[in-house]
Amino acid sequence: MAVKTRPAVPVVKGTASADEIAAALKVAGGVIIRNAVSQEALDQIELDIRPGLENDTAWNGSFFPAQTRRTTAALQKSPTYAREICMHPLFQGVSSRFLTEKQWYWSGTEKQWTVSRPQLSNTIVFSIGPGAAAQPLHRDDSIHQRVTKFAEVYPSGREGTRRDSSIGFFVAGKKATKANGATRFIPGSHLWDHNNPPNEDLCEYAEMERGDAFMMLASCFHGGSANTTADEERLIFSTFMTKGYLRQEENMYLSVDLDVMRKYPVDIQKVAGYSLSEPFLGWVDSTDPRKLLDPNIPDNTDMWTGVEEPADDWA
Ligand SMILES: O=C(O)CCC(=O)C(=O)O
Ligand SMILES: [Fe+2]
Image (cartoon, rainbow, N blue to C red; front, side, top):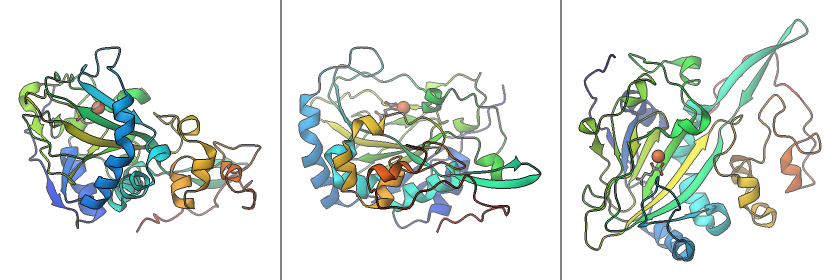
């Protein structure tokens, strides 16, 4: 099985562009972003989600260590999480570049172009306590039944938008070190063939200060590591975006009350899943599901965008 030398771990500043981060992800599969989220936002998010962590009990299974506490449905619990993490411009910008898909189909003898934009897949807060064992190395794209073929380099253009099902954004709510269990990952493993098993010896650790973030393609091998400290909590805000036509990992429609969703601005509602994936996927009552949140918006019953290929419209 072809395994190339490992690329270095890319580390960029929070002022980097989405294009720079996308380019680095294509090479390494994961990127560390310094100072991605402000300390004030993290203070508020922690206040919002701490009760949920305190109410959680040990996972009944082996994937999460007994010392891990989780809380989900961040949109229900923390508008600051929604705005500052889910809608982070770099997370949204990079997700648009990898996960937006354009395709044409025949309508009679006319080609009709459609665009499917990415949506939120999950929002999970992890608190991983002292003594927690390491997670096995895994790829998060298994939830979407993905089978990755070996590639020398990440494909460009439309083929590139078909490779990954999801992108993760792990924001450090507290310092993450090798000792307290920082996420480890295998740089370059997003290009590996499905049959190529992970290898612990090839791992690097995403060590972060509070407010740094680790962005990762879902095809990259990774896992939470052992927390070998006596008294340090590792606090991670973990958010994924996925394709507009795949099932969300966390069912946002059942996890977030409609009354809570109604209070959010339109951009958050759309990213949460209240929009159509063209040509006509995800409707309610044969129209845009966002009508459930705002009955005054116009009906959307167009099943295509047009005969011209739409331009890439991200900033
Ligand atoms: O704990 C971490 O850093 C990563 C968690 C993870 O990869 C998972 O739960 O799928
Ligand atoms: Fe994972």
